Length: 253
Image (tube, rainbow, N blue to C red):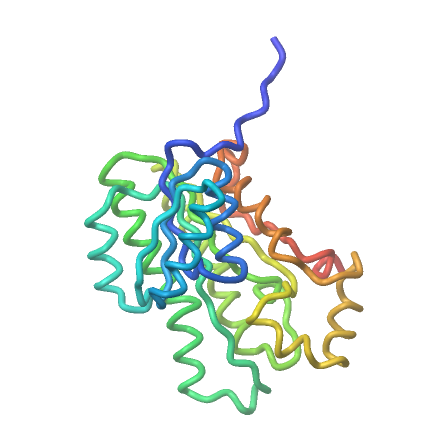
């Protein structure tokens, strides 16, 4: 009998996307909804959420939204405990405060670590608790970065946060495998988004970035959407503790 390709469909599964109103998070929300998931978009600003939900509805995609400060652990926990479990979580909310190592401030350190690491950990913890209690399998996807594997100029703080996410992901995968909850990271190169616009607006920096990307172009949000669906779906049923590099070959050397 011929083997059959596992499904990339996500029908009947609930998905939570943090930072889901722009950039990679928005791409994740759309991709998961296109694959059949019932998506909940979480972000700080209610107006941005309403805009995205309306646009997705116009496209025939099932989505709802919730205004949450995901660094407020207790509020996030209360929300997740009050709704049906999410079988897919995409931790996309993140921030950067780029400066030389010598110029990193305690305030910027706290801001970056609170969102990039602490929120990722505690949102995941709340989602996993519901899955374990309900005896459900799941897929946790952390949006990390190539800078979780290499360094770069003025990226010491950002890299530190993403290296930490990589370690968190692997440790989670070890602990949660017995519950059939998979945990992976996606590690993009520079994607053209609002977050990267300032850095990439510097011609010299842009040229350096392009010199490092072996495929010779910047990333697009669309480049991340397929990998998200893959890791969320049964097509990745044996993939956990992995880092999916979507970096155009940056880290190949």
